[in-house]
Length: 186
Image (cartoon, rainbow, N blue to C red; front, side):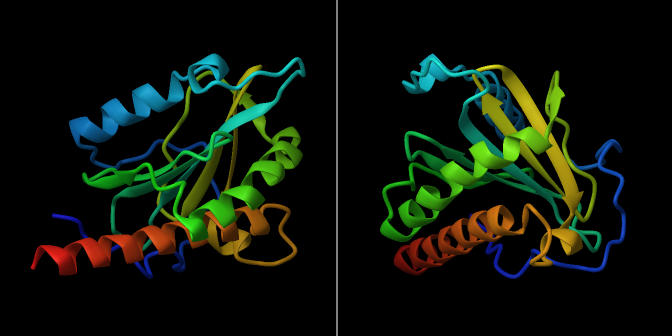
């Protein structure tokens, strides 16, 4: 059913080319989820603003290193909606009300607005290659994307390290929720 994902962030890939095409296999459900989430508009999630380039949602895609050949995607919205999906199938939605996740979302949302200026305008989201993380910003002005190697994001001096850390905490909490679900099903 659900595969435990704990401890899979990290690795030794030195690839810093975030423009490369991914070779990941994706389930139809994951493809449908990506299509749905990347086509959302601010009004679809009840986000109202008069300002330009305001972030209403952020998706972190992690191309897991070490030949694992799949992507983990975590989404966070200003509405406190949060979900996680994997390219091989499975995921969990509607976890933003969980107290620990909600606490991380409270930190993620202002960080995304601060960091979007470092991202590039994109016409469509690309999946990362192995060992690369992409942050995709859904804004009132369209899609913006920023990519970097996992190893760089893990250094405190990197401008995206705090955001990466918050999203990683969300992922870890969701992993715990998966574990609890598995235990309850046994």
